[in-house]
Image (cartoon, rainbow, N blue to C red; front, side, top):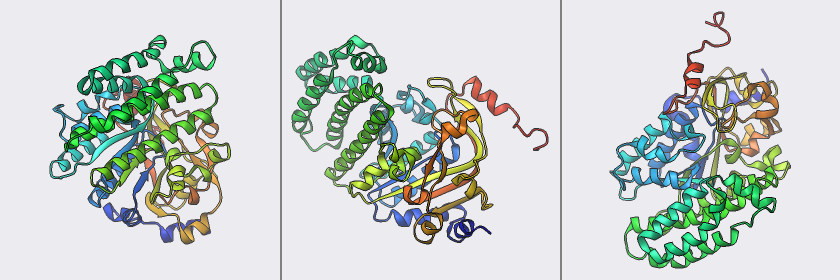
Length: 437
Protein backbone atom coordinates (compact mmCIF):
# COMPACT_ATOMS: atom_id res chain seq x y z
CA UNK A 1 0.00 0.00 0.00
CA UNK A 2 1.21 3.51 -0.81
CA UNK A 3 2.61 5.23 2.32
CA UNK A 4 0.46 8.32 1.88
CA UNK A 5 -2.70 6.23 1.63
CA UNK A 6 -1.69 4.17 4.66
CA UNK A 7 -1.21 7.33 6.74
CA UNK A 8 -4.56 8.74 5.59
CA UNK A 9 -6.35 5.54 6.53
CA UNK A 10 -4.66 5.51 9.93
CA UNK A 11 -5.59 9.08 10.84
CA UNK A 12 -8.86 9.74 9.00
CA UNK A 13 -12.11 9.92 10.94
CA UNK A 14 -14.63 7.76 9.10
CA UNK A 15 -17.30 7.50 11.78
CA UNK A 16 -20.89 7.96 10.80
CA UNK A 17 -22.94 10.96 11.88
CA UNK A 18 -21.66 13.72 14.12
CA UNK A 19 -18.80 11.63 15.51
CA UNK A 20 -16.83 12.28 12.31
CA UNK A 21 -16.80 16.00 13.10
CA UNK A 22 -15.12 15.57 16.47
CA UNK A 23 -11.65 16.65 15.29
CA UNK A 24 -13.17 19.88 13.93
CA UNK A 25 -15.04 20.55 17.17
CA UNK A 26 -11.92 19.80 19.21
CA UNK A 27 -9.81 22.16 17.08
CA UNK A 28 -12.52 24.83 17.34
CA UNK A 29 -12.88 24.66 21.10
CA UNK A 30 -10.66 27.71 21.65
CA UNK A 31 -10.99 29.18 18.15
CA UNK A 32 -12.32 32.62 17.35
CA UNK A 33 -13.09 31.82 13.70
CA UNK A 34 -13.81 28.56 11.88
CA UNK A 35 -13.66 28.84 8.09
CA UNK A 36 -15.60 26.14 6.23
CA UNK A 37 -14.70 25.84 2.57
CA UNK A 38 -16.09 24.09 -0.49
CA UNK A 39 -14.46 22.75 -3.64
CA UNK A 40 -17.41 23.89 -5.76
CA UNK A 41 -20.14 26.50 -5.46
CA UNK A 42 -22.81 23.95 -6.34
CA UNK A 43 -22.46 20.68 -4.38
CA UNK A 44 -25.26 19.55 -2.07
CA UNK A 45 -23.04 17.66 0.35
CA UNK A 46 -20.68 20.59 0.90
CA UNK A 47 -23.59 22.79 1.96
CA UNK A 48 -25.24 20.07 4.05
CA UNK A 49 -22.04 19.16 5.89
CA UNK A 50 -21.23 22.81 6.56
CA UNK A 51 -24.76 23.34 7.86
CA UNK A 52 -24.44 20.49 10.35
CA UNK A 53 -20.97 21.58 11.46
CA UNK A 54 -22.30 25.11 11.89
CA UNK A 55 -25.12 23.88 14.11
CA UNK A 56 -22.63 22.01 16.30
CA UNK A 57 -20.34 25.04 16.49
CA UNK A 58 -23.23 27.30 17.53
CA UNK A 59 -23.97 24.84 20.31
CA UNK A 60 -20.29 25.21 21.24
CA UNK A 61 -20.53 29.01 21.57
CA UNK A 62 -20.17 30.48 18.08
CA UNK A 63 -22.22 33.64 17.68
CA UNK A 64 -22.63 34.41 13.97
CA UNK A 65 -22.48 32.93 10.47
CA UNK A 66 -20.66 34.97 7.79
CA UNK A 67 -20.84 33.88 4.17
CA UNK A 68 -19.39 34.64 0.75
CA UNK A 69 -22.43 36.74 -0.06
CA UNK A 70 -23.29 40.43 -0.24
CA UNK A 71 -23.82 42.38 2.98
CA UNK A 72 -27.27 43.93 2.37
CA UNK A 73 -28.81 40.71 1.03
CA UNK A 74 -27.45 38.65 3.91
CA UNK A 75 -28.51 41.29 6.45
CA UNK A 76 -32.09 40.94 5.25
CA UNK A 77 -31.77 37.21 6.02
CA UNK A 78 -30.20 37.99 9.39
CA UNK A 79 -33.17 40.13 10.37
CA UNK A 80 -35.50 37.23 9.55
CA UNK A 81 -33.59 34.57 11.50
CA UNK A 82 -33.40 36.92 14.50
CA UNK A 83 -37.18 37.59 14.41
CA UNK A 84 -36.76 41.22 13.38
CA UNK A 85 -39.01 41.06 10.28
CA UNK A 86 -42.36 39.56 9.35
CA UNK A 87 -41.36 37.96 6.05
CA UNK A 88 -43.31 34.78 5.57
CA UNK A 89 -40.45 32.27 5.29
CA UNK A 90 -36.76 31.71 4.58
CA UNK A 91 -37.24 31.76 0.80
CA UNK A 92 -38.81 35.22 1.03
CA UNK A 93 -35.97 36.43 3.26
CA UNK A 94 -33.50 35.20 0.62
CA UNK A 95 -35.23 37.18 -2.13
CA UNK A 96 -32.55 39.87 -2.00
CA UNK A 97 -30.08 37.48 -3.60
CA UNK A 98 -31.10 38.39 -7.14
CA UNK A 99 -27.65 38.74 -8.69
CA UNK A 100 -26.01 35.86 -10.55
CA UNK A 101 -25.41 33.22 -9.22
CA UNK A 102 -28.62 33.04 -7.24
CA UNK A 103 -28.30 29.34 -6.42
CA UNK A 104 -25.39 29.94 -4.04
CA UNK A 105 -27.81 31.08 -1.34
CA UNK A 106 -31.25 30.45 -2.82
CA UNK A 107 -31.10 26.68 -2.43
CA UNK A 108 -32.82 24.02 -0.37
CA UNK A 109 -29.98 23.44 2.11
CA UNK A 110 -29.69 27.10 3.05
CA UNK A 111 -33.46 27.30 3.55
CA UNK A 112 -33.28 24.39 5.99
CA UNK A 113 -30.37 26.00 7.87
CA UNK A 114 -32.19 29.33 8.14
CA UNK A 115 -35.33 27.62 9.45
CA UNK A 116 -33.16 25.97 12.10
CA UNK A 117 -31.44 29.27 12.96
CA UNK A 118 -34.76 31.07 13.36
CA UNK A 119 -36.13 28.32 15.62
CA UNK A 120 -32.91 28.25 17.65
CA UNK A 121 -32.86 32.03 18.03
CA UNK A 122 -36.34 31.96 19.53
CA UNK A 123 -34.75 30.22 22.53
CA UNK A 124 -31.64 32.42 22.82
CA UNK A 125 -31.04 35.65 24.73
CA UNK A 126 -28.39 36.69 22.17
CA UNK A 127 -29.47 35.56 18.68
CA UNK A 128 -27.10 34.20 16.03
CA UNK A 129 -27.06 36.38 12.91
CA UNK A 130 -26.32 35.65 9.25
CA UNK A 131 -23.99 38.14 7.55
CA UNK A 132 -22.35 38.70 4.17
CA UNK A 133 -18.64 39.30 3.60
CA UNK A 134 -18.65 40.07 -0.12
CA UNK A 135 -18.58 43.37 -2.01
CA UNK A 136 -20.57 43.14 -5.26
CA UNK A 137 -23.56 45.08 -3.93
CA UNK A 138 -22.38 48.65 -4.59
CA UNK A 139 -25.74 50.06 -5.68
CA UNK A 140 -27.77 48.01 -3.20
CA UNK A 141 -25.50 49.18 -0.40
CA UNK A 142 -25.88 52.81 -1.46
CA UNK A 143 -29.65 52.38 -1.36
CA UNK A 144 -29.39 50.80 2.09
CA UNK A 145 -27.34 53.74 3.41
CA UNK A 146 -29.89 56.20 2.07
CA UNK A 147 -32.81 54.25 3.51
CA UNK A 148 -31.14 54.15 6.91
CA UNK A 149 -30.36 57.88 6.93
CA UNK A 150 -33.88 58.73 5.79
CA UNK A 151 -35.07 57.18 9.05
CA UNK A 152 -32.53 58.68 11.46
CA UNK A 153 -31.23 61.91 9.88
CA UNK A 154 -33.03 63.27 6.78
CA UNK A 155 -30.55 66.14 6.35
CA UNK A 156 -27.67 63.67 6.27
CA UNK A 157 -29.66 61.56 3.80
CA UNK A 158 -29.90 64.57 1.46
CA UNK A 159 -26.13 65.05 1.59
CA UNK A 160 -25.59 61.34 0.94
CA UNK A 161 -27.86 61.49 -2.11
CA UNK A 162 -25.80 64.31 -3.57
CA UNK A 163 -22.58 62.39 -3.01
CA UNK A 164 -23.85 59.08 -4.36
CA UNK A 165 -25.38 60.97 -7.29
CA UNK A 166 -21.88 60.88 -8.76
CA UNK A 167 -22.53 57.23 -9.69
CA UNK A 168 -25.76 57.96 -11.59
CA UNK A 169 -23.85 58.77 -14.76
CA UNK A 170 -22.90 55.10 -15.08
CA UNK A 171 -26.31 53.49 -14.62
CA UNK A 172 -26.76 50.30 -12.64
CA UNK A 173 -23.77 48.44 -14.10
CA UNK A 174 -20.73 48.80 -11.84
CA UNK A 175 -18.52 47.25 -14.53
CA UNK A 176 -19.36 50.24 -16.74
CA UNK A 177 -18.24 52.52 -13.94
CA UNK A 178 -14.94 50.65 -13.67
CA UNK A 179 -14.35 50.67 -17.43
CA UNK A 180 -15.04 54.37 -18.00
CA UNK A 181 -13.12 55.65 -14.98
CA UNK A 182 -10.11 53.36 -15.48
CA UNK A 183 -9.71 54.47 -19.10
CA UNK A 184 -10.04 58.17 -18.25
CA UNK A 185 -13.43 58.68 -19.89
CA UNK A 186 -15.03 59.80 -16.63
CA UNK A 187 -13.90 60.97 -13.21
CA UNK A 188 -14.08 58.36 -10.42
CA UNK A 189 -16.45 58.81 -7.48
CA UNK A 190 -13.91 57.69 -4.88
CA UNK A 191 -13.76 61.00 -3.00
CA UNK A 192 -17.54 61.26 -2.68
CA UNK A 193 -17.86 57.68 -1.41
CA UNK A 194 -15.10 58.23 1.16
CA UNK A 195 -16.64 61.53 2.34
CA UNK A 196 -19.94 59.77 2.91
CA UNK A 197 -18.28 57.00 4.95
CA UNK A 198 -16.37 59.53 7.07
CA UNK A 199 -19.50 61.59 7.84
CA UNK A 200 -21.51 58.50 8.71
CA UNK A 201 -18.82 57.20 11.04
CA UNK A 202 -18.65 60.53 12.87
CA UNK A 203 -22.40 60.44 13.44
CA UNK A 204 -22.64 56.78 14.44
CA UNK A 205 -22.33 57.31 18.22
CA UNK A 206 -25.36 59.58 18.03
CA UNK A 207 -27.32 57.24 15.75
CA UNK A 208 -26.55 54.20 17.91
CA UNK A 209 -27.28 55.92 21.22
CA UNK A 210 -29.54 54.01 23.57
CA UNK A 211 -29.61 50.50 24.88
CA UNK A 212 -31.47 48.76 22.06
CA UNK A 213 -29.62 45.91 20.33
CA UNK A 214 -31.59 46.48 17.13
CA UNK A 215 -30.68 50.19 17.09
CA UNK A 216 -26.97 49.48 17.46
CA UNK A 217 -27.09 46.69 14.88
CA UNK A 218 -28.85 48.92 12.33
CA UNK A 219 -26.17 51.60 12.76
CA UNK A 220 -23.42 49.00 12.41
CA UNK A 221 -25.06 47.63 9.23
CA UNK A 222 -25.28 51.12 7.73
CA UNK A 223 -21.58 51.67 8.39
CA UNK A 224 -20.71 48.37 6.69
CA UNK A 225 -22.79 49.33 3.66
CA UNK A 226 -21.05 52.72 3.41
CA UNK A 227 -17.65 51.08 3.74
CA UNK A 228 -18.63 48.51 1.13
CA UNK A 229 -19.39 51.30 -1.36
CA UNK A 230 -15.84 52.65 -0.96
CA UNK A 231 -14.30 49.20 -1.42
CA UNK A 232 -16.55 48.24 -4.33
CA UNK A 233 -15.71 51.50 -6.07
CA UNK A 234 -12.02 50.55 -5.83
CA UNK A 235 -12.75 46.95 -6.85
CA UNK A 236 -14.58 47.76 -10.07
CA UNK A 237 -11.75 50.05 -11.17
CA UNK A 238 -9.19 47.39 -10.24
CA UNK A 239 -11.02 44.83 -12.42
CA UNK A 240 -9.59 46.57 -15.49
CA UNK A 241 -6.03 46.70 -14.12
CA UNK A 242 -5.60 42.97 -13.57
CA UNK A 243 -6.99 39.92 -11.79
CA UNK A 244 -4.53 39.99 -8.90
CA UNK A 245 -5.44 43.54 -7.85
CA UNK A 246 -9.17 42.89 -7.84
CA UNK A 247 -8.82 39.50 -6.13
CA UNK A 248 -6.70 40.99 -3.34
CA UNK A 249 -9.09 43.91 -2.84
CA UNK A 250 -12.01 41.54 -2.56
CA UNK A 251 -10.41 39.21 -0.01
CA UNK A 252 -9.04 42.15 1.98
CA UNK A 253 -12.58 43.52 2.14
CA UNK A 254 -13.92 40.17 3.32
CA UNK A 255 -11.31 40.11 6.08
CA UNK A 256 -12.10 43.71 7.11
CA UNK A 257 -15.80 42.86 7.25
CA UNK A 258 -15.15 39.73 9.31
CA UNK A 259 -13.06 41.71 11.79
CA UNK A 260 -15.68 44.48 11.97
CA UNK A 261 -18.36 41.86 12.68
CA UNK A 262 -16.26 40.24 15.39
CA UNK A 263 -15.65 43.62 17.03
CA UNK A 264 -19.39 44.35 16.95
CA UNK A 265 -20.16 41.02 18.63
CA UNK A 266 -17.65 41.81 21.38
CA UNK A 267 -19.18 45.25 21.95
CA UNK A 268 -22.51 43.49 22.37
CA UNK A 269 -21.08 41.33 25.14
CA UNK A 270 -20.02 38.30 23.08
CA UNK A 271 -16.66 36.76 22.29
CA UNK A 272 -16.54 37.50 18.56
CA UNK A 273 -16.70 33.85 17.46
CA UNK A 274 -17.79 33.45 13.84
CA UNK A 275 -18.35 30.55 11.42
CA UNK A 276 -17.38 31.49 7.84
CA UNK A 277 -18.65 29.85 4.65
CA UNK A 278 -16.62 30.48 1.50
CA UNK A 279 -14.91 28.63 -1.33
CA UNK A 280 -11.70 26.71 -0.61
CA UNK A 281 -9.87 29.30 -2.71
CA UNK A 282 -10.81 31.94 -0.11
CA UNK A 283 -10.64 29.76 3.00
CA UNK A 284 -7.32 27.96 2.42
CA UNK A 285 -4.09 29.85 3.01
CA UNK A 286 -3.02 31.21 -0.39
CA UNK A 287 0.65 31.08 0.60
CA UNK A 288 0.51 27.29 0.21
CA UNK A 289 -0.75 27.50 -3.39
CA UNK A 290 0.25 28.82 -6.77
CA UNK A 291 -2.16 31.69 -6.09
CA UNK A 292 0.32 33.01 -3.55
CA UNK A 293 3.22 32.65 -5.96
CA UNK A 294 1.51 34.99 -8.41
CA UNK A 295 0.92 37.63 -5.76
CA UNK A 296 -2.59 36.83 -4.57
CA UNK A 297 -3.62 36.69 -0.93
CA UNK A 298 -6.90 35.48 0.50
CA UNK A 299 -9.15 35.44 3.53
CA UNK A 300 -7.64 32.36 5.16
CA UNK A 301 -4.13 33.78 4.85
CA UNK A 302 -5.16 37.19 6.24
CA UNK A 303 -6.92 35.59 9.21
CA UNK A 304 -3.79 33.61 10.06
CA UNK A 305 -1.49 36.58 9.59
CA UNK A 306 -3.68 38.68 11.90
CA UNK A 307 -3.02 36.21 14.70
CA UNK A 308 -6.67 35.17 14.96
CA UNK A 309 -7.18 31.74 16.49
CA UNK A 310 -8.67 30.07 13.44
CA UNK A 311 -9.46 26.64 12.03
CA UNK A 312 -9.36 26.27 8.22
CA UNK A 313 -11.46 23.40 6.87
CA UNK A 314 -11.61 22.45 3.19
CA UNK A 315 -13.68 20.00 1.15
CA UNK A 316 -12.84 17.78 -1.83
CA UNK A 317 -14.79 15.44 -4.10
CA UNK A 318 -13.71 12.95 -6.75
CA UNK A 319 -16.75 12.73 -9.00
CA UNK A 320 -20.48 13.35 -9.16
CA UNK A 321 -22.71 16.18 -10.31
CA UNK A 322 -22.69 19.91 -9.67
CA UNK A 323 -24.85 22.99 -10.18
CA UNK A 324 -22.87 25.48 -12.26
CA UNK A 325 -23.14 27.72 -15.31
CA UNK A 326 -21.23 27.56 -18.60
CA UNK A 327 -20.64 31.31 -18.82
CA UNK A 328 -21.03 34.31 -16.56
CA UNK A 329 -24.62 35.43 -15.98
CA UNK A 330 -25.91 32.28 -17.69
CA UNK A 331 -28.53 29.88 -16.32
CA UNK A 332 -27.70 27.24 -13.74
CA UNK A 333 -27.09 23.79 -15.22
CA UNK A 334 -26.93 20.32 -13.73
CA UNK A 335 -23.48 19.10 -14.80
CA UNK A 336 -21.48 15.93 -14.35
CA UNK A 337 -18.13 16.30 -12.57
CA UNK A 338 -15.32 14.34 -14.15
CA UNK A 339 -13.20 12.01 -11.98
CA UNK A 340 -10.25 13.71 -10.32
CA UNK A 341 -7.06 13.85 -12.39
CA UNK A 342 -4.04 11.68 -11.74
CA UNK A 343 -1.65 13.55 -9.47
CA UNK A 344 -4.46 15.39 -7.68
CA UNK A 345 -5.51 15.36 -4.05
CA UNK A 346 -8.91 14.18 -5.22
CA UNK A 347 -7.39 11.12 -6.88
CA UNK A 348 -5.24 10.33 -3.84
CA UNK A 349 -8.24 10.47 -1.53
CA UNK A 350 -10.32 8.38 -3.95
CA UNK A 351 -7.60 5.72 -3.96
CA UNK A 352 -8.09 5.19 -0.23
CA UNK A 353 -11.34 3.43 -1.09
CA UNK A 354 -13.25 5.46 1.50
CA UNK A 355 -16.40 7.33 0.48
CA UNK A 356 -16.22 9.91 3.27
CA UNK A 357 -13.67 10.97 5.85
CA UNK A 358 -12.43 13.90 7.92
CA UNK A 359 -8.64 14.21 7.94
CA UNK A 360 -6.64 16.45 10.32
CA UNK A 361 -3.59 17.67 8.41
CA UNK A 362 -1.03 18.06 11.19
CA UNK A 363 1.61 15.82 12.70
CA UNK A 364 2.39 12.57 10.91
CA UNK A 365 -0.19 13.36 8.19
CA UNK A 366 1.57 16.64 7.40
CA UNK A 367 4.93 14.88 7.14
CA UNK A 368 3.59 12.09 4.92
CA UNK A 369 1.55 14.35 2.60
CA UNK A 370 3.86 17.36 2.44
CA UNK A 371 4.37 18.78 -1.04
CA UNK A 372 2.20 19.98 -3.86
CA UNK A 373 -0.45 18.13 -5.81
CA UNK A 374 -3.19 19.39 -8.06
CA UNK A 375 -6.33 20.64 -6.35
CA UNK A 376 -9.64 21.16 -8.13
CA UNK A 377 -11.63 24.36 -7.77
CA UNK A 378 -15.05 24.68 -9.40
CA UNK A 379 -16.66 28.07 -8.89
CA UNK A 380 -19.91 29.29 -10.40
CA UNK A 381 -18.68 28.10 -13.80
CA UNK A 382 -17.71 24.53 -14.68
CA UNK A 383 -15.98 23.90 -18.02
CA UNK A 384 -15.14 20.20 -18.13
CA UNK A 385 -13.74 20.46 -21.67
CA UNK A 386 -10.89 22.65 -20.34
CA UNK A 387 -10.86 21.26 -16.82
CA UNK A 388 -7.09 21.00 -16.31
CA UNK A 389 -6.52 24.64 -17.27
CA UNK A 390 -9.76 26.03 -15.87
CA UNK A 391 -10.19 24.22 -12.58
CA UNK A 392 -6.90 22.91 -11.18
CA UNK A 393 -4.08 24.63 -9.35
CA UNK A 394 -1.08 23.40 -7.39
CA UNK A 395 -1.37 23.35 -3.59
CA UNK A 396 0.30 21.91 -0.53
CA UNK A 397 -2.88 20.91 1.30
CA UNK A 398 -1.08 20.39 4.61
CA UNK A 399 -0.11 24.07 4.76
CA UNK A 400 -3.23 25.37 3.05
CA UNK A 401 -5.73 23.89 5.52
CA UNK A 402 -5.98 22.48 9.05
CA UNK A 403 -8.45 19.75 8.14
CA UNK A 404 -10.02 18.41 4.95
CA UNK A 405 -13.31 16.60 4.45
CA UNK A 406 -13.38 14.27 1.46
CA UNK A 407 -16.66 13.10 -0.07
CA UNK A 408 -15.84 10.77 -2.91
CA UNK A 409 -19.10 11.04 -4.84
CA UNK A 410 -21.38 14.05 -4.54
CA UNK A 411 -24.51 15.48 -6.13
CA UNK A 412 -25.64 18.82 -7.44
CA UNK A 413 -27.04 21.47 -5.13
CA UNK A 414 -30.78 21.99 -5.65
CA UNK A 415 -31.69 25.63 -6.46
CA UNK A 416 -34.99 27.10 -5.36
CA UNK A 417 -35.50 28.13 -8.99
CA UNK A 418 -34.70 25.29 -11.39
CA UNK A 419 -33.92 26.34 -14.93
CA UNK A 420 -34.96 24.12 -17.81
CA UNK A 421 -31.28 23.42 -18.42
CA UNK A 422 -30.83 22.27 -14.80
CA UNK A 423 -33.90 20.00 -14.91
CA UNK A 424 -32.90 18.60 -18.30
CA UNK A 425 -29.39 17.81 -17.05
CA UNK A 426 -30.73 16.04 -13.99
CA UNK A 427 -33.08 13.93 -16.09
CA UNK A 428 -30.37 12.85 -18.56
CA UNK A 429 -28.83 9.41 -17.97
CA UNK A 430 -25.14 9.37 -16.98
CA UNK A 431 -22.48 8.93 -19.64
CA UNK A 432 -22.01 5.28 -18.66
CA UNK A 433 -25.66 4.42 -19.51
CA UNK A 434 -26.62 1.61 -19.96
CA UNK A 435 -23.38 -0.24 -19.14
CA UNK A 436 -22.93 1.68 -15.89
CA UNK A 437 -26.29 0.65 -14.45
